[in-house]
Length: 132
Image (cartoon, one colour):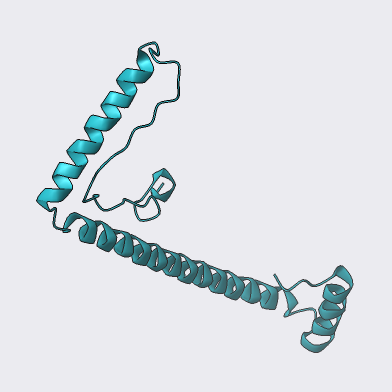
């Protein structure tokens, strides 16, 4: 923690022994150990509280994003475009499953006026965001 070498600790022990005396040295060492334990427990408690608060803040931000996404208005054009996209995708999957009947390259054009809002994977929580 404080990065003392053995020589520095030995020198500190000799100085304390000369100042305090050999009679009170064990009592002083016990008292110092108790205070060190109390300080360490306090610091660990504070660290865990700060980490919990940061995690709660992150979870609140994610919940707000999900709430905003869930409250977005779905327009009729979005539903039509979504159905059109699903139909086109189903046709593509069906054509990939069947053997090709044409020898030339095939081109598909989509004429969609309204596209549904994109879902960004960065905005949604993933498995790495779960608490353990």
